[in-house]
Image 1 (spheres, rainbow, N blue to C red):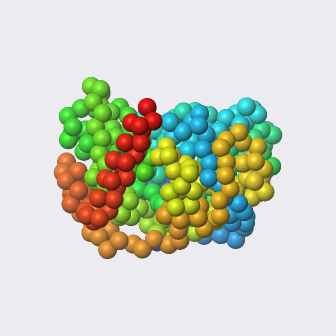
Image 2 (image 1 turned 90 degrees about the vertical axis):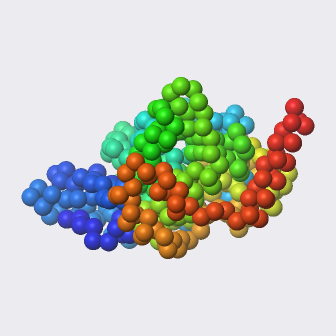
Image 3 (image 1 turned 135 degrees about the vertical axis):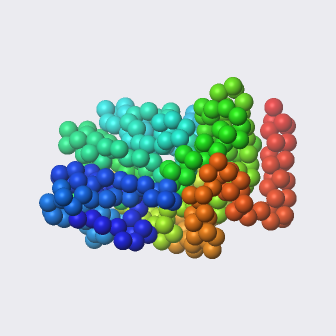
Length: 384
């Protein structure tokens, strides 16, 4: 029977929930806003299945990843505008749908909830900086594969590792895509923050854009659209939710010592932002957004080669530079414990409470970002 004694040893992938033959495991939310599995001892039959499929408790059961075989800078001109970066994921997804397969990915179910859905590529576009609810995705992926159909599953590295553990064997029709993941805040914190924003702005939020590129791909904004049509944008360092996420304060405990980041999840493909484009490939640095694609398996190599996209190979060290999602362990911020200790008492003052933990961006970085934002805007005006 699975029993979480150390929260840093649970990534919340729900493989144990999906694998339980008597459905005795449910996910329960802790005071930090993260979901963890709890097994009902009265229903448990002691089969050990839950522990066997856990990617952390039984890491030897997972396929050994080959690492990054080849990396590219990439963009899909047709999909870049609606995506956080270069628009590569929609191309991968459409390829699977056109072959009669099914695509699984994270989407906003409503402004407070992110969960995995099937085949809705438009809803899957864009970043969602909150851990998604997988619902029955693992079971549905297996059903699809056992019918002989192709299935593309996209998610965080730990979610891909959880799926691999749950499936227990490789399927030729399975394609797995993970993101260069910096870590995830909890759904409880996000839901409370939406409430706080609605109180602050006086209305209901109907749309959220974690990375609105109106102000630029690199200097993106956190933007909400209200029910009266107002669009309220904040720089990524000015919005408390985004700032604390980027400062690593609100991440899940397992994210600080992630075992699956850096193409170790067993995924076929990893997608990330090519933040280092200005230094590595300045001719491609037009401010529209560019993906890094890492092929981590022979299957991934073949898939990337078949795509109709702008593609240019780049050395691995240059591809992953400046992208925290490709880094190793993340130090736990000194203020994390204090933040979550006081969180239950924040109540309606959540916005102000969170803002109080935001570190101010150093002056030289603010000047640098302002300069590049201004130059980018001038470039756009000159090209009109």
